[in-house]
Amino acid sequence: MGKLVSALTALTVMCAASLGGAEDAVVRLSGDVLIRDDGGMVEVVIPLSAPVPWKVWLAGEPPRLVVEVGGVDLGELPEVDSQSIVTIVSERNGPKASQIIAYLREPLLVDTAEMITSEDGSAQLILSLAPATGAEFQEAAKPLDVTVEPPVKTRPVVGIDPGHGGRDPGADAAGQSEADLMLEFALKLRVDLEATGVFDVVLTREADVFVPLDARLSLARAADVDVFISLHADRLDIDTGQASGITVYTLATQAGAAADDRQSQRNGADDILKGVDLSGAGDQVARALMALQRQDTDPRAAALSATLVRAFEASGLTVNSRPERQGEFAVLKAADIPSALIELGFLSSKDDLERLTSEKWKSEAALAIRDGLLQWHQEDTLLGQALRK
Ligand SMILES: [Zn+2]
Figure 1 (tube, rainbow, N blue to C red):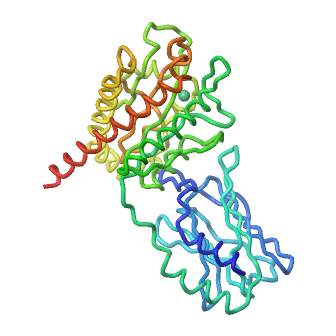
Figure 2: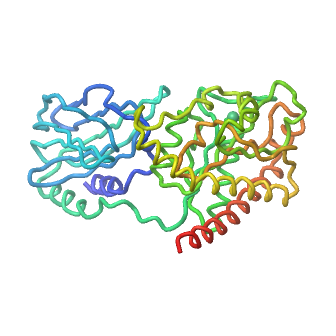
Figure 3: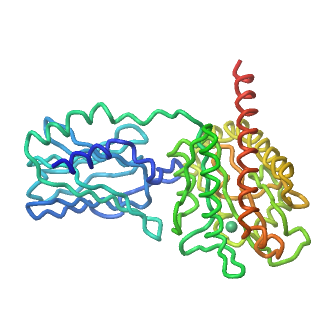
């Protein structure tokens, strides 16, 4: 039973690695909650339209399993036919916490629990429950009530978003895919950032998997990131004479960015240009709040972009002839998180391809981003404190 208890303890921690519940989109059950029950192990499968942050715990009196799944719109759950579970009900515990509560007929412990994301962006939370004695259940159900609180954040969190992945490899050149290059670069950058002792780092993907654009933002929000950096190296098929060197994009604020927009439309994947749906259409209050939030975030993002470009230049790295630009990139649309998209180079440029595949260049570029982020964070903190006074 030692294994079961330790597996359970691990589950009491917020599962930050799972993707976050978008405030922007409603996540729903995409089918019935399945319970597979053969009198021994019990498997519970919760199908969702998108991944969300989740946690699982046991509670006593009456014995029950509580599954919290972000802000999922659960609706009413159908009756279950199970030897081990009497009934399952849904409960809304605030806007961001929906619960599925399974009342247990007999003591069960959580053996494993994982959220699996499918290629189409949907997800399944799969729980495996094992029979236990009453004493074991009580022990497992007791301490959990005090450990449900989210972990305390000690450092600012940098969200790093390696572009593309899975069925969307992004640009390619000489057998190198943009998705692979960006993932490798992101993993390197994470090591450099964590080594500062100043930042914690969260990646939107850590493998060659497809992650929808809005899920990348949801993840950033669920991990409470303070700054968000998306990494790309696209192709420009039309040679404008500008398609080499590092470019840093921030979100286009107004129509004045139309020219930049045309530029960003050539960046390989079309879907990066699709806007994230704000909260329900016609919700004017939400939009007004977003606009207010933007007044705070936009100048911070502009400072981030300028500081990053200065850091690249200070490191002697080749930047684009117009290194700071604006674009309508979906991954930059979190109104509350200063965000930048770095085109580390263009795979359509021979010089850039050489740089992007050079270990020395990659190390220098990662260190330059680290230095830029350190500088920006320091100034941003000072400015924030001055403004609050
Ligand atoms: Zn890209």
